[in-house]
Image 1 (cartoon, one colour):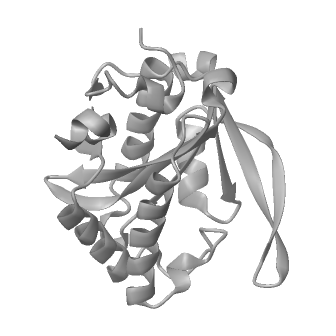
Image 2: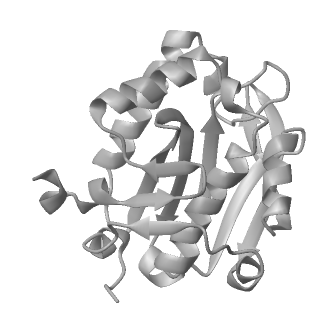
Length: 216
């Protein structure tokens, strides 16, 4: 079985309305279709790469190639986990977290996207909540960071709602101009004030080595 060689396939994070997990190939095609149908409303910038501005087929291929590429490059010292969020059995978006030297630093960086048709329902907050539960409660994370354009109000609101604190800015180049993002950080102490008991994680045993940590 594939889980013998790649135990991450058995990992499940469940919140009251969502299941976060690695998809099958058919389900990956489904989430690519979600991206093709639209991720933003064409207003505020949301991603530094600008992939949401590609034509529908370009967005779908970006999702597919990004997913395969990050899994293919995975090492315990440098990994990125893209969990597809399923709502009522259908893919609605992706919640990711990545880390470098996690076994030593115990810090993760998160990112996410949600299909336009599924926005405004609190699913983005719930996706991040599930990921944070996995990170802090199961993997022993010390802090989690996220960065958002200031005009991306939905992402900023999620960070503030979940207890992140401002942590400076980052400056990058997008389409030939310098853009600034606000960085947010969530400490373990602040997470403990907001953690919930209705999130569960299964299938983690056997994955610890892939994350660069010891089994407990």
